[in-house]
Image (tube, rainbow, N blue to C red):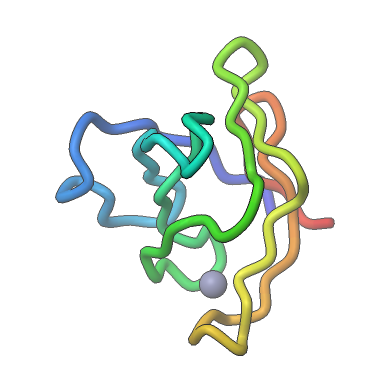
Length: 85
Ligand SMILES: [Zn+2]
């Protein structure tokens, strides 16, 4: 997989694989609500993820958790690209 991050301004525009919007997390860290680059389903972030605008990267790695209705995809957002783990 190698899909470009497409940051949008409004959560209502997070519609297709790779789309994402920045939201503030519980500890005022920048997090993403994104469409999964594998299945396209929109979901938010659980836990302590942080989006780094300087590097267009997200850490730790992304898991689209099957227990929460996801597809099980595991990968990374690095330098503005979604790639497999
Ligand atoms: Zn998925």
